[in-house]
Each structure stands twice: as C-alpha cells, then as structure tokens.
Image (cartoon, rainbow, N blue to C red):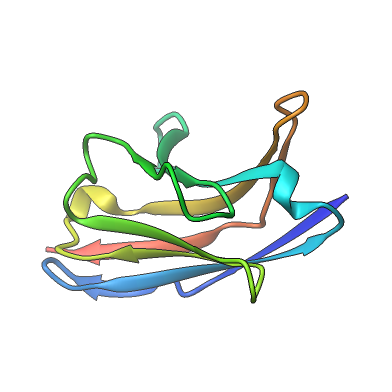
Length: 118
C-alpha cells in the first residue's frame, strides 16, 4: 500500500509559479516511479511528468517541457513539481501517482487544483 498526499495548488496569474508537493508513505517506495498527471474540465487525464526515487530519468510532456521541473527527495519521501511560466491552459486538477515497477499498478493521490488566470 502507498499513500499519496498532494499540496501546493492554488490560484495564480499567467506567468506565475507554483510548487506542488506529493508526500508518499508506504513500504518499498523505491519500487515505484513517481509522477504527475492532470485533468482539465471536460478533458481526458494527461501525463505531465515522472521521475524515479534516485532522481534520474525525469520525463515531461511536450506541453510543459522547459517550464516544469520534477524533483524527488528520497530523504523526505516527497516529490515536487515546480511549475514556472504558468499558462491558463495549465489549469487542471493535478494528481500525484506512484506506479509499481513490477506490474504497472498505479496509486493516486486525491488531487490538488491549479487555476491560472489570464
């Protein structure tokens, strides 16, 4: 079992920044890849970014490359998503996920709302 708790969402103007945090708890967290997905109203859920606990191999959706940075802090069991140069189209509920490497089973957090005003 893995529990994920997100925080850091909110309302920001276009061009601004936010940092999302995802605190993970559970056994053998090293067996999971951590990630962020988002879902905007009326749209399908989409991949944003992912990273492993060693901090290597970060990946990003094309839509956020160069603006978002994902970091994992193993000492705190926390993954961060630094979001800069935010755009109104980044408005969505952001979900933290933990994907088990053995079978690709996903755990999800409760989600945190990010709203970017124009």
